[in-house]
Length: 435
Image (cartoon, rainbow, N blue to C red; front, side):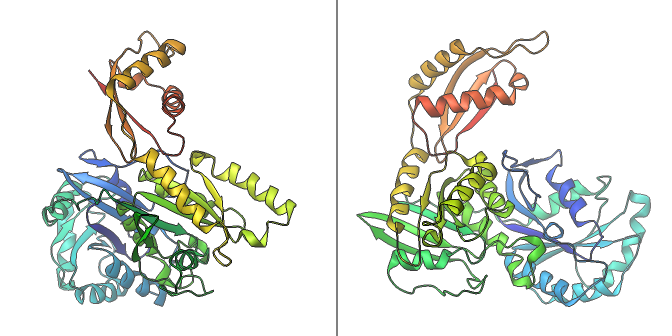
């Protein structure tokens, strides 16, 4: 994933527009795997072969029109705390406002790298509008137009030039890394405490008690695991204390490091759009997923609630239908260790490798069974396929016209591969390349 870079600034200076421009730049490869429909809060970008994650702080909430309320100060403080670098966006047309000065004062106190981007500079003839911003005491000062694209290449080049080239973290093949995710108060810390058998983490009924990610290694039945407990991802409109704001960044960090996402759902509350978003984050990252319906002891004797929960899960979480579900109670310990058994099952599928000859034989049978539909005058021809990666299983399929692969046919092939090779509990990625 690389370093995390957050865009901060007063309301209405163009943070979300800049985020959209950077993440869709022609020179930037954006990780945009299909998931659930949701607001885009982050994008994984590769510019000049250098990866980083861009976070749109404007996408978390509507801060209103007042330039710098106390909550905005908290937002900036936590952006600085959780990110590796900051893009500080200002409005070149409006000039320096008190909110800019107060934000600059916060940013000057940090040891993080800060890039001052003066927005709404539509061309070199307007570069002079950036001159007054030098008195904020932050350099470099870069002129951009988020709306029209001026200066975007220079901004990307400047940001990536400061990213150190570090080798990727070595993967311990014997350890299954699990990221525990869920809305605040879903019982994440209680679950880990129950698994480990002692009060290793802070547990409280107040949502958001777990402020920092805590990694806990342990061994069970001769296998090594690493549990990554993350702060809850609170629904945007209900964020009252800004300390929850950048828990999303922590969730992204833990997802980048894990193999399996154990996503806790609260049986005492409705399955929400926020639960679907969290599943979407994990799916976007290509992680194995196990759904843990916690607090099952509260509803297991209520047939009406059970039926309603199952129906809501089918409706809202259909896009991760491959993910197994375990009904647990972290409070009583009911079925908690079954969760680890399901994680083992998912990890076996997630890390499985299939011989190229088997893949091509299966592909030929699938195409013969259901040939691709004709689109216009052209036709789609398949040459061969191979599994290029595991975690998740990724298959590269060489064809004459990748642009002719309809999403419905891609879905058909994915389902056929899943059934043929019994990859029932893992996401599967197909990549179509021209030969």
